Image (cartoon, rainbow, N blue to C red; front, side, top):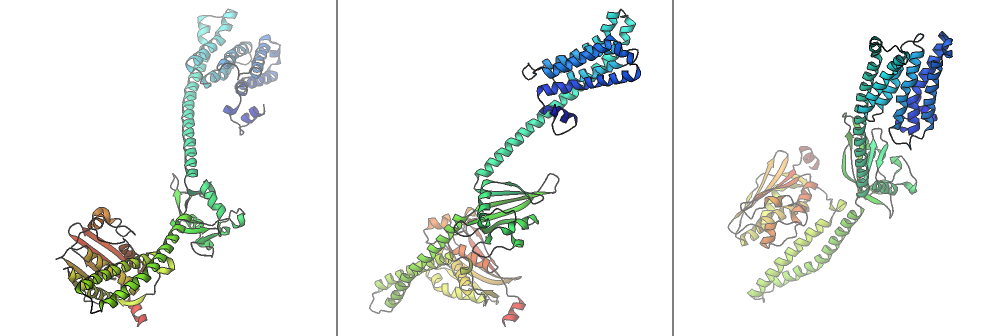
Length: 553
């Protein structure tokens, strides 16, 4: 009863949430309430109607049907039998219409209640609506036959009420079926949406990436299992908090917490997009290193609907990279000492006049291979330097002079290989840079050009000014680089298929390190190549500005 009253009061409980008995009672109740209102009208207008057996019988029948609706266990009775109640409702309505015809006319319209119940049930509407129409016809014609007034004129004059009730039933049935179809579609869509949501939640809880979704007010709307683990790692002393400023968030390698205005959450909520920024969450052995990306997303209306964060735990990856760099650095230092001794003693032996020409030739091969191995060790050692270890002091240099010196250094090697080494560098190109790093770039570019060029070809070194850039080009007529190899040309430890097939030794580090050094100087290193024609490597470095020249002078 409490739920029925809640439905009548338009509360939180909905009609379809009631039990079958509650729905039957609630469907019958409007007719009984209306008939009770009729009793009130009769008491105010003509109380003699209460003495009419027909009036009393109609009220008693209506109350009996309400009692039946409330008493029977409709949940255990085959579905559809409850529609016997609205069909039987036409009996008290017909009796009431006939008994009050002289006092209250038009009570046949009460048939709207059962006819709408029959049509609104949605149960076999093609049968129930005509049955309701026939019951309405019996409601007005049966009294005519029982009283002997069933003349053609009288029967025809009473057709309007059944016809109107039948029309109302048909209209109600059409709207009910349409509403049921829409409800079924909505339920199907809701089921699909729920299934997709469960699938998405399962996927997000399965992947090893932390996902955090905030609504447009900046409040947490979703957090998957991995993100909860990362959140726990950032808690101060394990105490939960809703303030990001209290979380232990550090820049990778720093012991100072990130200032609140630089933290990723506030920046992205303010409209900024971040990609793959590395932070440390927490401190001590349980700290985690994460790569965070985040951006806002728009709703269907185009307005900001919230923010999404993705956090990838890269703790093991960073540790492995650091371990690799330390290993490379240690091994490079271990190799350097014996190589230095080999080269030193070889140079001493070279001055020995007692050596035969064959021995001197063998000594030259030994020294050449030792220098090559030493060059490889230098590359590996340079590759192991990261962060502050790779930083160098920038000094005023002339790129043209460095190119000229490189050409002089590789002149003898070019001659031995029967390769012409041309130089086109006439204009001074003042730059700021690390001499060691830039010399390594130029040596690597010229060395590669000579290694991959056949005898009888030309390698050209060009230094020129191009806008705000100092440009050095190294052009060869060698093997060339295939298009599929260009994408990994500047990747560490990667070598082209042509280089591998040629048997030319190398580590695959030189070009990667050269590009890194160029970018550390604010410049760039590019390559264009064609198989069988040759390659052009272009180094661009920013020229020293007039203000920098005045300061340095």
